[in-house]
Length: 376
Image 1 (tube, one colour):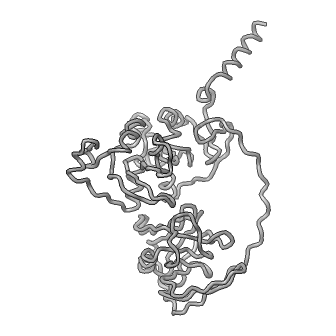
Image 2: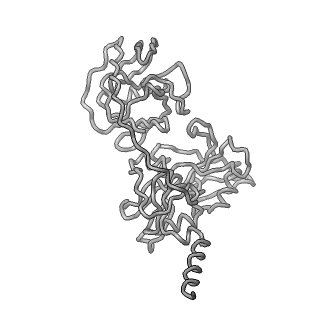
Image 3: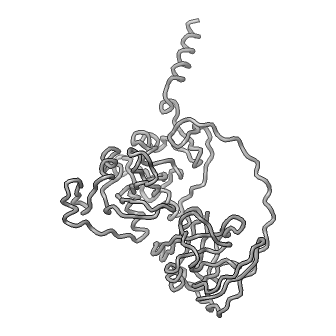
């Protein structure tokens, strides 16, 4: 009886023990990634209010130079052997701004001296309302780093938001939030930087990890689904007939690359591995989805009338500027008939719609033969 009582006591103690004390590994169902203490990242996530400041893991730990790193939606954890295996936050804010070629003007003397703002001589920038209270309450320099910009306005998805860049994060004001206490949030800059760098974000097996939601609370794994066999592919539409003579192919130097991200509805132009230009896009709507894959520009037409019929719809659009064909009748081109780029609204019949100025820049920069990667 005494032994039975001891066993029962142990079981009851385990039931009452928080998840953090029971499990050495979590499995985030939404992202399909594990988080454990092989390198101390799980403890660092818990101790640093990870659900709020880092978000969910989006990669597995891997070696990056002398460091072991793991990417999260809003940041990156790094194991530094040179500093007695200290775990630090990665400088994703500074790296993302540099990758996009962003530069931020310094504040005026009046802004620096404003009583509601805090000035940092190390970087020359300030923090003020509403970002300052959030920055101080959730870790300050250790979590977010120093400011590397003043507040500015950017499109986040399809919403114009006020943001401020820090060494290790980007803070955002969500205008849709009705609660004053939830106005400021940490942007998903870890995810954006990981995508730009081609980090492997594929889901992994849960194995013995406890399935959890975004906040680390226990969640049941969804039942397995049976994937139906793929439907036969629709025949590729014939390309629209150019009304002007396409540019002749030229040898590609290999130092230029265009990436179109369908999830974010955004285009990036890279030269020598560095992003030098980016622009919002609007791609093919359902039923006319823009194809995913690796292509290249095979023809360029400065201006043409685009016409075609597909899926029971016909169109005739005159004077379409700066068309760059990448596969079949699918082209990057300037668009004057709507202004919903980067909003998540997909308007085209498969082409990649660009703002007029962006299409003109890309047309002049990218020769025939430039690789184009279209990804989800």
